[in-house]
Structure formats: structure tokens, C-alpha cells
Image (cartoon, rainbow, N blue to C red; front, side, top):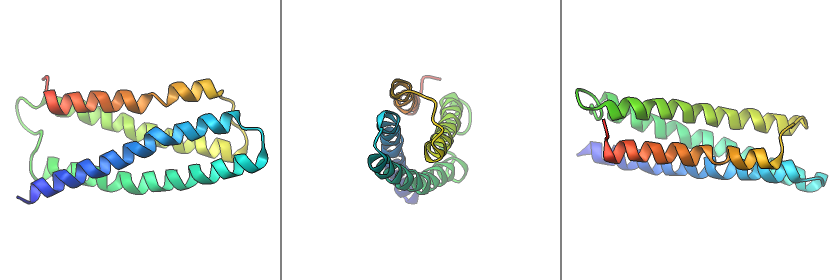
Length: 142
């Protein structure tokens, strides 16, 4: 019965992590457009705190997911090809998270070269990843 609690916690932390992954690039859109120093500093402060929070939240999301996989065997064995696809997408999601950190550092150094339009497109990546992950987990197409 413990596995249900682990699964619930995994879902809660994943949702929280995605909330940050959806919002941080929106802050980047505003940073890319902002010209006032005071507003830029406020947005950078928001982005720093959010990135720190996202990173802290991502850790238990990943730990609980790995717990379900390795301890309870969810997604292991024949007929669980969907889990391989999900794991690939989770690795891409971790890369996206780190890319957000790299972009934040560029904003902090004042060397951002990308437009607000680019960040609007960048903001769609976690939506696509979430959609694909949910479909794999729920539908289990392979």
C-alpha cells in the first residue's frame, strides 16, 4: 500500500516542477523585453527564486519516480516500452531544466542575445514534453 503514497507524492512533485517549468520561461519573455533596470532586477530576483524552488522540487519528483521503477517495478518487464519512451522524455526535461538555468545565468550577466519571441517558443517545450509523457503513461501505446 506504500507504493500508492509514493505514486501520489511523485505526481504532486511532478506537477509542482512543471508549474515552475511553465512559468520561468514566461519571466524570460519579460526579461528579454524589459529596458528598465529596476524592473529587470525584480524579474531576475523572481527568476532566481523560482529556479531554486524548481530545482528543489525536481529532486523528490525524480526520486519518487525512480523508487516506483526500481523498488516496485512499475514499468519494468515485457510490454512496458512506454516506460523507455517516458524515461527518454524525462532526460530531455532535465536538460530543459538545466537550459533554463543556463539562460538565467546569461540574463544575470546581461549577455542575453535572444528575443522575447524566441522565449515564447522556448516556453512551449515543457507543454509538449508533458503531453507526450502523460500520453505514454496513461495510454501505454507500446
